[in-house]
Length: 598
Image (cartoon, rainbow, N blue to C red; front, side, top):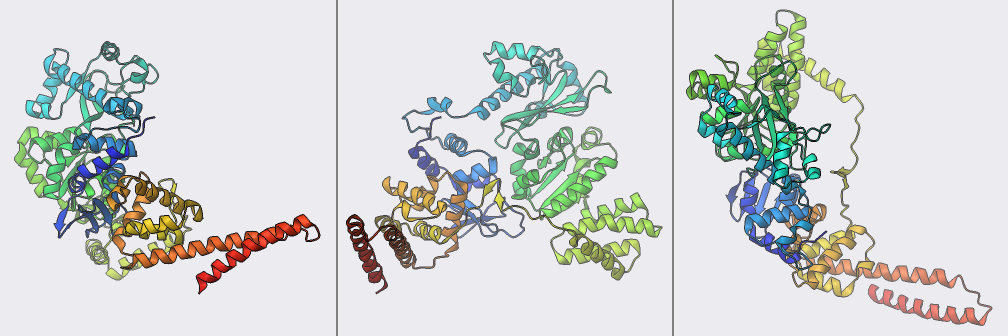
């Protein structure tokens, strides 16, 4: 497999505006020479995540995640180093070159399967869209969504389509466009059991876009036939370019409004989401075929302070709303709940009453605590002690999800008011519940991060990190030590990274980070750069470290010679000669060691 050249990596790192790239995922505000926002890697309300364009790095002072623009894209897009470099290169207009001298034409040598399937899905989405708006076969589906109130402008914007009823048509069509059977069979567009049969047929098609606006999957809605044998929606399975639990429908259209409004509406499904957008409420998204996940919350957490939940009012919808409230609150976000009245969903409200009615529903959204107290009171009733206890039990889960002790106390007080129970009684039940849960055995997770061992920052590694924070010190260290003088694997790896940069005459922080494709090494380097843990005198720290390692090396050699001297017999002339040579070498080492002491 071809290796992207160091020259390309450096050019990508320099040409990419890290503030602009990070700003696509996190809402940033400038303070002095740095930009700040809430960290996308952990939950927080007070921004501790910084981007420093002068150094071309990001760093979180809360969770200590850090790196350069390439690592950030790797983490956010869940892609490998070559993919991140290639993605940024396209964005910055940098030609991708390889170690063997090839250029973009050599990209075939890199695993670009993901991009190939994205290209396929975009082509298929265009075909489905044409079938919907331009053919008689798709006319009934077009009439259906027009009756639901969607305009042609909206249909074009979301590239809605129609999958033909002939299940064998799509395979024949794509074969005629020179797509191979093996490639198509792994695409997710066809039945796993019957490879020539299309997975989607005779359905209204909703393309699922990634944050860049590329089609990566589909959701298909049933429109006609036997509804008992066909599910209302079927969705693409997880694919190389698509993970259900890590994608939000319409986020590519909503992210600008989400960033400016600092809020997001999370809907039940695609039609509800599209209805909000057509009504000018452009900060709506939908999980699409899955319950809301932590990964989906992370997508919006860097932009918003408040999540609006717009789910169905039936039992399943209320259960999902309760779960989503806890999930959002655990992520440090405020939550409000939209109640849809006068129709079964936002799409019906839009169709019956227009955009104003939907905007009023958003404006009247209830605070999550009041919504829960009201719905739980209706569910269990509060006229009996048993009903009150059940309401309290479920509401305590909500209180657990809150981070502020003031919020917790206030909500316990409000619970007591609704139930007509003293605050002391409420607090006792809440504390008894906590004590019961705390007495349960806790399984401690293994010390791993994403399946990889967390790098131990030992004394040797700290010496090399000091060279990263002040790069002029590495030339001195390199003259005095070799890779073999270090004992820890982490220090050896870090030495090689710095040595490679030194030999390429690119020993600067941004170039060191640009040439490092190991996220864990990059994280600790950025942490060292930002933490100032070595103070102002890194030169003394490095020199003392070099002296320590050299002395340790001399002591190891002396101990080895001492062990060797015990092996030889002084009665033989040969043994005496070897002993004299070993003794002379040991004496020389003793003198060096004593000289170091003085």
